[in-house]
Length: 107
Image 1 (tube, rainbow, N blue to C red):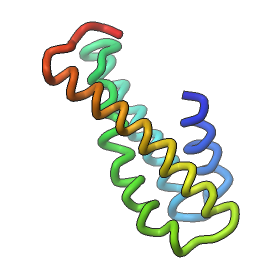
Image 2 (cartoon, rainbow, N blue to C red):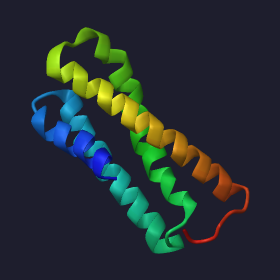
Image 3 (cartoon, rainbow, N blue to C red):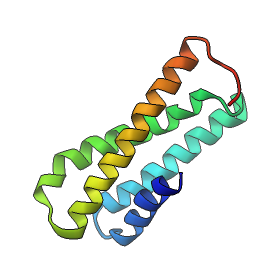
């Protein structure tokens, strides 16, 4: 969780003058709000990964499309955000599928 925050919030703040930096902050807030709503209704369950799936999938797609047109620290940040968020999305997808298949136990 710390790495996700560092990459997304930290990078978003460092590169806030770019659309990608602003997108990182908006997506973090959107994921938080979605997950908070799920938590209020269902508790701490695997379905919480839906927040990341909804908010970060478009972000990762966007970053993947523009990363080749960038350079320097900005490009390194985009690559790290793509890598970290993609790994998290894979884990979240497994969690959401497991929840959908009946694994509804609190974590």
